[in-house]
Image 1 (cartoon, rainbow, N blue to C red):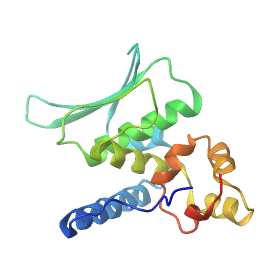
Image 2: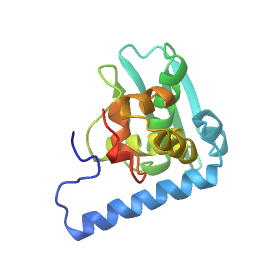
Image 3: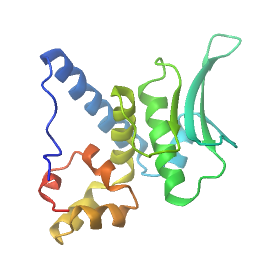
Length: 173
């Protein structure tokens, strides 16, 4: 069992950026007033395209229009279904809202869990969007372990490490 809220030693500026990004995530989710990533993309005028992407689950990109405006696209593999489709959409929405100036982001088939700073931030956004804090609180009060919580919310257990919530690190596997 590892402490899910332990982070590598960071310089104070890195910690400030991390906390600032978390605050931005919380503000966006509060502003959205929905936990549904498909409703959220409509609020931000993000174009969603469903395509046969082979082993790629999804990606985000931005193009500049004729008059200089940025046009955001989320591309989802047309073969995704159910909760996996929601998770990938939420992850790519995280990129669209947090990383529009960072280039393209591609989530490959081998795992829903991705690595790197931008990928971690998109995972954090996705899990914060998809897991309602009130429902999570009820699960914890009922004594659910991490496997049960992941199953209840339909997310991979590894994604729970991105969820900021008191007492979640005390759950047992």
